[in-house]
Image (cartoon, rainbow, N blue to C red; front, side, top):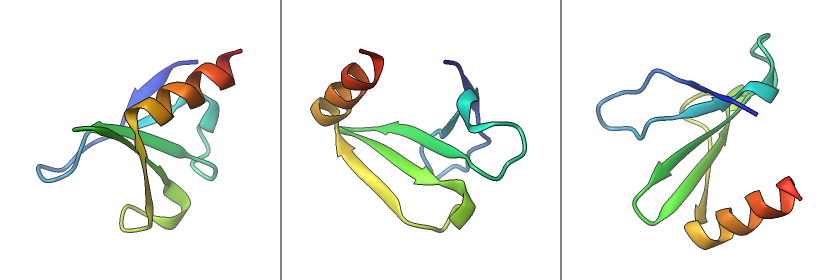
Length: 68
């Protein structure tokens, strides 16, 4: 899996889109690392849509589970 840097704004964290999201732009999931948490959003709802906040230990457990 690889990630693509998504343009960011000065007051936003740096968002990354998974290469598994495809290039058509329809099914994109982006993640951003913040202080003490990882943020996840669905780009179909736009940049102003809901953002899921996951603690770093929870995100590490999710990534380990998804990889194994």
